[in-house]
Length: 408
Image 1: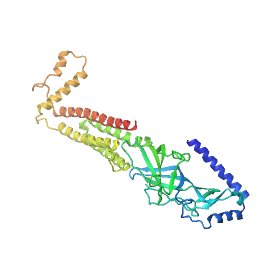
Image 2: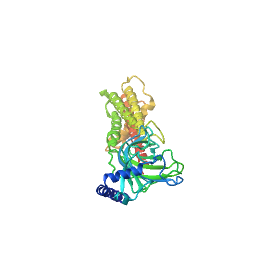
Image 3: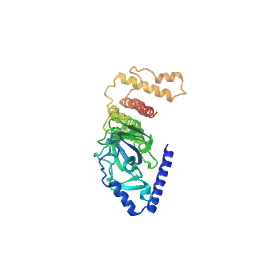
């Protein structure tokens, strides 16, 4: 469809060039001035150009997108540049070419004759009718008028950041004929998609699909729908991977020896780093939970909570480690420590006899190896390490599955 339209556009451009040279060669200034005076003299530009005003004026409209400036998720707006190819028939602008030295067309000022008052109804800027200054109209001898208003458009869009940064945004721009009903104006679109041959590639968003919907009920409306798919690589490298790496480093704090005294400072530093990345993510996303909270925000909150719990676990572990040996260790703690020591010894010693293995796993009865608070602290670190690894895998696996289902 696009290729067919490109050929049609090229043919139209060539035709206009031929007309231009034909006009300049065949028609003199005086003839063209006479034609201009005859067309505009006494012309009422406020009336629709129909012989019978009970008939609606058929407006053929197309949109040519040139580039996408940005999709602002926080404000919920889309900014782009493009122009509209608007064509209609003005029955008061018809002449016989042989009467004017074979002049096929004439260029008139935009305010010389009637033109449809088009407006972007879901604009994010102040409402204004499309009327670029110093823009001309191309009028053919049979009354066909061609108007090409270029616009910097900024319109609202319901941003769905559920699967950020692997999201696809569907945004629609509505164009209406301001002040007219379908009894006066009827829109028509020759294409079912937006013309994209002049579109410049955006580094952040990929324009994957477009569609056009014409509605001539009550108010004539043309809706242009754009499907933008985010290019996630930049955010993947600068946000997702660093957060995952920080979460892994945070879990590794349990591998540091308690005697070093650096565990608490290390875990607090990583907690603050996660907070910084959460702040960055919040700056990129709108303060909205509709239709649901972003998956990346949920993951970052899980990492933040996990980092806070790790700091608390480090504090508890340090208190265990530096307790005096005079303080009594509860029996349930001793049983857990002995079980952990027994399990570790079984994995370390593979060539011992059964009797020696049993000695390592003997139940606590008050006479076996003395359990210290340092043993309790190390056992607590081991349990915490396993717990947070499982929590890390579960949290990130949920994020991956959620995003994969959303992209399917």
